[in-house]
Length: 181
Image (cartoon, rainbow, N blue to C red; front, side, top):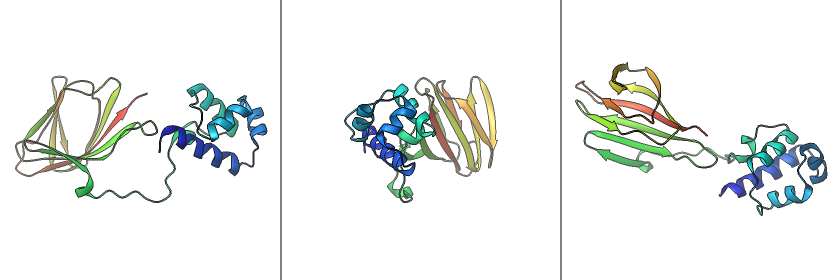
């Protein structure tokens, strides 16, 4: 579903839940009935300002208009994830960023005595890493951070960084890359 379809579906649902006519929502939001109707039909791409006005009129956060509603749990099996291999490092990609979701979710595996270096990601990105098995060393900004099982680190991933496993068993970690709007 594209973003206009998501917004259309959410606007119809939120307006109906509140028992609001297009006219009443127009009064509450300051957005014309014609524009609201076009948005509900998916015929218009509303600006952020328009979304904010509508959200204010509905008394919800604007993300309620742009987030795809989940009807049933979405299950992705490890063997169904997008897997990328790189010399002793495997990453399983479970969800991608899109206009309604500003993060990606990964699970990483680092073989004994292996390392992986990232040259950095795009502007305004952060990583959130939780070590779930073993020990991992994060090399970042000339510093070395030793992370044990259960440890968490958050950093600006626009900079180069390296994950290292100096141990004799595999290291596993969960990684979320967040794209700051």
